[in-house]
Image (cartoon, rainbow over all chains, first blue to last red):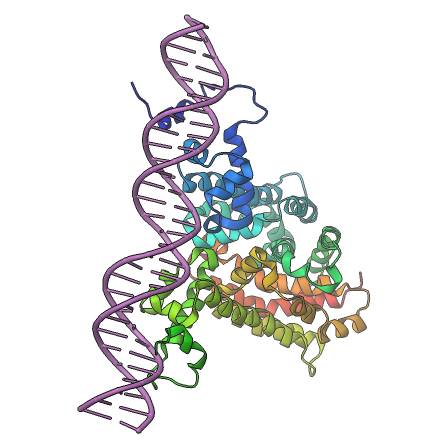
Length: 215
Length: 215
DNA sequence: TGATGTTTTAAATAAATGATTAAATTTTGT
DNA sequence: ACAAAATTTAATCATTTATTTAAAACATCA
């Protein structure tokens, strides 16, 4: 009896013909897809780019993931979780004060973005192209957070939305603008990373200033 | 003697077969290209999308502009000038104080972006895909501006790069994040524009606070 | 080892898409 | 109105690209 390869897809985790390879073909493809999709976005990446990045035969993409679109959705959901989940966890931490949260966000999120510089533009672009990709629930997690509670009780006169958006703007925008910033005279020689790391210290200070000034 | 239509391209401005149409075919194509390219980016737009948006035969794109890429470069340069030129002119104004410049940027640039909400992500994406598109000279105009001089003389202790980047972040990022913000509970009903307009007043206040606090 | 199941490969297919052609239509100048 | 020039159209071409196929290679285990 003949079974098309696709038939076996659902059982693949139970049976593995080749075991103990350093890294499975499936994972090689996913890793290549992470790199290429986040670097170029869905429309600009060709399945051939991914196969090449993975060093594998083109047909394997469809063997393991059926279509470019299915593979993309998988990667996209990972990346959205990374982008929104990281920040949501930091803003919802129970054991820290408001200003500690600002510090934690500035510190940890900047580190994460420096390691994933393509992430912000990827997420923003793909959500814009297809807003349905993005579940409302996630946005709520940001805006209705422990952080929100704390700021409202300390400074009920400050609009929390503006405050959070300012924080995210100052952290994320420089990463988005990296290709522009880097071409400026002052940044010609790999100064960009140093510049962004400076902001880890400065952002908490700026927000401290805002927080302790009556308007 | 036969001349291929392309031959006539260079003379088109001298001779126009059809005059006084409401809007020329060439301009119809450019306007459609502006809309579609900025909405979807180069890779995701098909020449057929532009023809459809313009309500014209597909072949006319190549008749007037020879290739998708040539048309794109034309639009891209317009859009880059709009994005960088607008801000550079505001930051280099000779007749205004530092804080007036902050106000002018907040006010005018936010207005411009609300009318061109696709502009920031378009510019950032396309520069990232092809940094060569972006001439170093433009970035310099931002960072070495009248604004730079004024801030350095008033507050030599403040890093001008961080200051300008903060200003741009707070103005541009919300527009980039619109598809996310809009899906948040609080913004369900067309509150976004009102929210961004509030920032026209608030950004100058925040920067005033920073500017008048010793660190 | 050989039968069976699984993975990988090279080649083929089909759809999408940028570009071109030649003919038809419209405009212009006389 | 006529001829020449310019524009527009429908059809087609050529290339790129996602996907499928069938056979080969490999792994597992009785």
